[in-house]
Length: 195
Image (tube, rainbow, N blue to C red; front, side, top):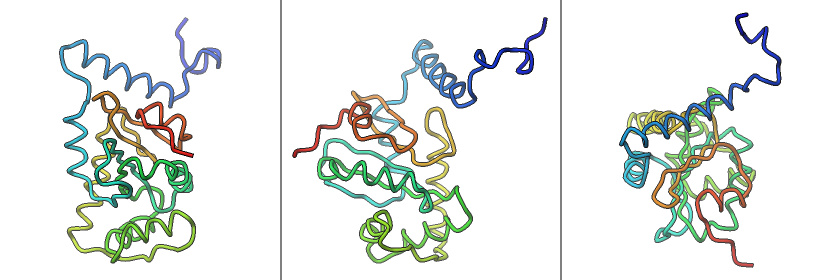
């Protein structure tokens, strides 16, 4: 008998998302077994230098995270709130991408072109201000396209937001979704916020 999604019991089928996670993990494991190294510090440095975003946090922090977000993403706002308690302990590069709606692109361009992008981002993420739509200069357009290309180049690439990239023990880690702070602390070896 030939097995197909129609003939296999539902319990034995991997959900598509789980399949892609498994495939991505297997690809990274295959690189390590083949003598290639898994993505690490050098890959993260290359990623960090090619992104155009808004840096928030302590500039001299030991830990850096690149957060890919869409201006229209509610989960991205939730992630902003999750990271707030540790914001003074790390440097986060909030990297806009435009994938959720056509208006996302003009809002992201407006954010990058604003006089004080960090302040505009903070007000937007706290729900206190709407970002103005703006058409950007060609250099901002190219930067936004570059951010999307960087997102798509991450291990186990997925065109979804938010996504967080950072280092843990010199290995590149990628977390998808608005994970709770405890999970982010574990994944990126972040210290517990002072109370």
